[in-house]
Length: 479
Image (cartoon, rainbow, N blue to C red; front, side, top):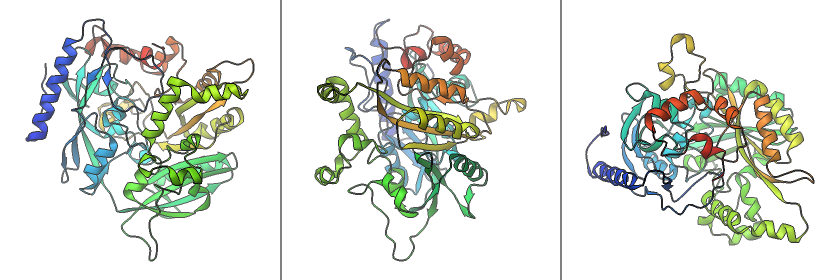
């Protein structure tokens, strides 16, 4: 077993070593052939699974920030640390992770082994691209430290989008960037989707709009003729007489996009602007009704609270029962994020708005960083995918299209038909689909899309006895 190198000394690192050794002992005690899972207190996955009788690996002691180095702008973080806690620790030093996923209870390990994204991704890529090294408990029951170069570079490249099927991240060393106290927002309306995607291309290329810098970029589509790009830029101070907006209480952030051309938020409120109402999904619980919202405790206006309500509905089916009582058709959950090449994004949006009755839609441009694992590619392979399990190409701009709701199941149709249509449309538009939610791919197609040869090589080396599920079983099959 290769022991992790610690970057410093102190009680935090000693506690981490103790927690790591305890986890190793737990893993070794699991009988061969028995299911292995993490006993996490939060989850942002939408893949339904039958409840497991096994208690799961106790990872509660792996949820802290070990150190923040303001001079080097790096942090050592245990993998089960939420971005809410990580951001609290880094903002105290005037720093933040390069990309802060939009929901507070996403963990740093989850964003690395799954996928994370946010409005800095057109500049900074994806969260796993900011990772300098990761300490991993492999499926073989060993602890190794993986980085872009070195003995375990294969594992480093294949962990993103592996969802814990090669091993579990324990500690990550990540890059940080400086922040300003405020973010100034400009909500720019577009009446044409081709015009909108053209503007995205120009902003990504110049990192500016109308001569002003753009540090954050995302978009909201309400209809084919009503879409907005939200351009954020750092601000050291507020204009005279302006106070920052507050969308953590009565006001709802996404509604402001349609009514305010200019806005200002504190850096913390900007980074968590989507969490208060789970983008716009809190409306499903009545939380945007003014009368209900006045009574709803402010501390419960959080994505993890809504997620708990979803889990209760999945278990007891109260809303589905009420729909049946009222003679309404059953509904299919369509909760997906997909990455579409910029040149095909407008066409995909036209298809979606025509075929799937869900709005609003979130847009978030992405461009991989030309660094990190990319630097290990041969000069002739600069257009290759440095992260093979989610093979976005270096140098190409993609747009994450996010849509999260339910649709009525038409007479004669079946549950899953709309999601299958989405998968076909994503393929037709040369895109990729994230795997945190329902997936319906056949096995051969799945491995063709998600790096089958690279995955199998890493699986043979780091989980030779297949103690962990493989990615297809975890992402597609029901258990």
